[in-house]
Amino acid sequence: MARLTLNKANQIIKGAFAKANEMGLKPLAIAVFDAGGNLKAFQRQDGTSILRFEIASGKAFGALAVGVGSRWLHNQAKDRPHFLEGLSGVSGGRIVPVPGGVLIKDAKGEILGAAGISGDTSDNDEAAAVAGIETAGFVADAG
Image (tube, rainbow, N blue to C red; front, side, top):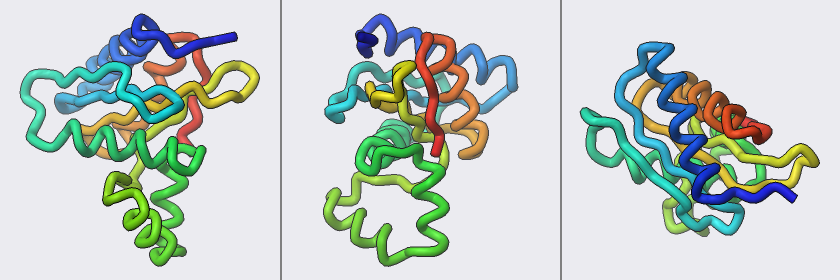
């Protein structure tokens, strides 16, 4: 059975930073959480602005909260703002409903955790998260 170990979480971060470098992205912050919502690893590149930990964490937390990548939450915000308002309320405002929160799954589809990235555009954040997750040998679900 696959596990999200500290070593694997750091591989996700390393792979995401490599993809960001390849794409020429702005400095990123990356938070990796296990399936229980516990922070496994976090790193921020030099030059990131403030609140990047909170934004990256909110993207990952949102993905874990609903069991699908945060792109789905972003789409729901357009069509069902009342749903997002309620979700924000019950989560204590911890959910950031924009792309960049990606579920980490094993080959059988079991959720092992989530990675959240903040620093560039949401689409670019998501692309870096997907690359990092796949680099570590897991399946990425962006929603």
